[in-house]
Image (cartoon, rainbow, N blue to C red; front, side, top):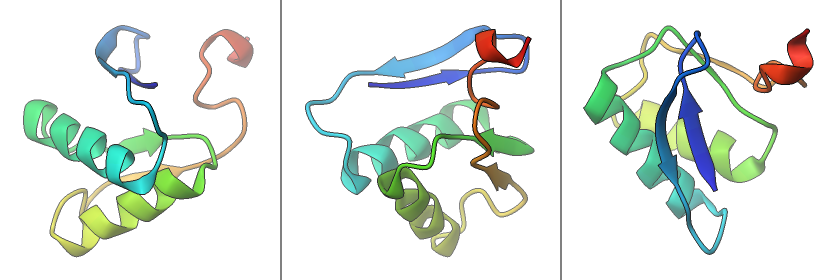
Length: 81
């Protein structure tokens, strides 16, 4: 499952897939940037599929001005308290 939230914790999009592979991550991240434009920062877990998909999208011209952070707990608003 992939879920995108904004800085206020509001859900932007949810996508349920059978696999959490690079292809699924690529499609989800591409869908987000087309729907909501390019964010300043993307915070994800350290899954290799997401990192790979993010790099691939950068090669194709997406997320050029976006910082990708993979620091533990930054992507979990509940655990930040």
